[in-house]
Length: 218
Image (cartoon, rainbow, N blue to C red; front, top):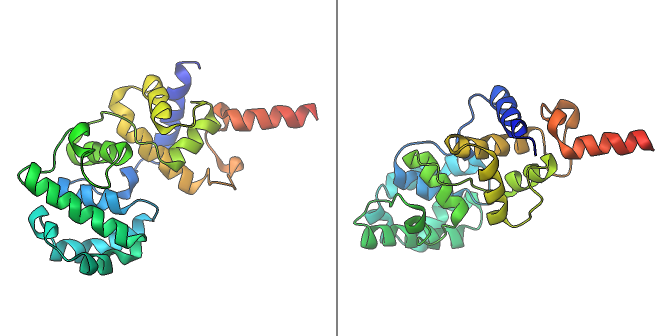
């Protein structure tokens, strides 16, 4: 791929979404970012933000959450979906942070991935949002789909997609490109019903260009 194309894609997205916050999860306290990012799996930012005030008023620290009753936590986070599994994960994560890291959320990818419910995607988001460290690019369903449509990757495995994207974009924008692609996937390039007519990326989109070419030939 032309080295200028990823830069053009990034600039076009940044112009269209200048106020994007990665994954809708606020910057700030690493413990809150960590827990909210775990809760954000397979749900909306609105659902996560709705439970935030009650959750952290009751369990403001890893120590408090680590000894919480699983059913009580589940009742609080129920709007986020999969609440039983998520309650178990965030309590287990809080316990490990308390026991293994003296109550301080670790700031490395390797350590974060030892926490219950934290995979590479979540760890990358926490590093970027809470610590300002862009060690990788979080690949969720939006990033995976749009990167493929644009022709930024031909891979389907998230780790390989991340590797391709890291080779295309400079490290200083790794955290931001995830946020921009997620925002674009929610607003314009929607799964199953992309609004190509409203998309600012059509000049570089392999899916759109191939579709036009095939239509012309037909």
